Length: 360
Image 1 (cartoon, rainbow, N blue to C red):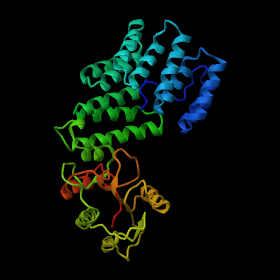
Image 2 (image 1 turned 180 degrees about the vertical axis):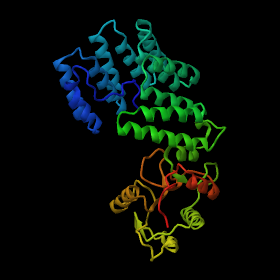
Image 3 (image 1 turned 90 degrees about the vertical axis):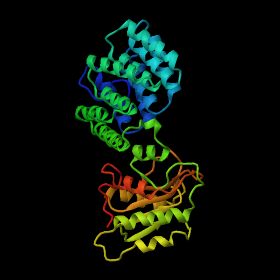
Image 4 (image 1 turned 60 degrees about the horizontal axis):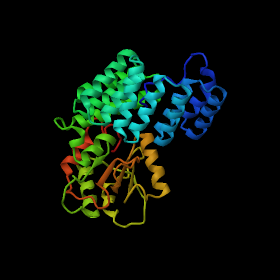
């Protein structure tokens, strides 16, 4: 998440031309080359404040928080007595979990320049990370009043969502989508709207209070067949039967099954096959998205691109980002009972992964 209120990647400002290559590389997802390009700019002109800020953000977005902090400290040495590098130093400490030290640096920046939107934005981010939602909202509202940015609206939406204020969060993310300058910013805002709506399905519960399978669905849109609990984990056969029950309830039919392994336990799924479909509707199955073969991974990508077919795995490590639509259980040893009714709710949610999928 970009959290420095510097969303403008390409601007007509004087000196922006020399940053164009570094920005383009970062925008294309080539962080190592972008880093070299930023360092070349700073070698040419060490007083380029924008280059320092964007290099910091490059490291931060990649999760390289030690490098981000080091960059901020070098910027503070280059610009002694200025507020903006102190805000970056504070942000670096916050990302490393040094809450008190990070807030102290950010407060120093605000004391030097009370009208620096970046410092107020980072103060809001730090308060949010510390679980202080009211303080976080006051800070980001101040930041937005000083310098309206889509990134600040995005942060405001996340704070409100974590506080369980889903309608207000959706309004903030909608504003971020409308303020987006580039397609990836707009897509991120739209994704956050969908996540917020999925969380809103569990109205009355803050995200942090939800069990793991519901948080997974809200964050990814992927349906989970097993409710988290202390029961023994369901076996593979029971998960396949639960999947078949949901498929028959929804009327899903597939033209072929692509298996990600040599396991013979997939045979019951053949009852879902139909031969007379006018379009190809594949079913991709694997025990785990990590162990799936190359052919299975390729068909998963095809399903995502075409909007036809479905991918199902028996289990997945928590937090793994993979193009999977239905998961039997979270983790190899994750306990809990199979919850077909809950799985159907996730499958039918208008903002779930399968909402507009062709499956018959």
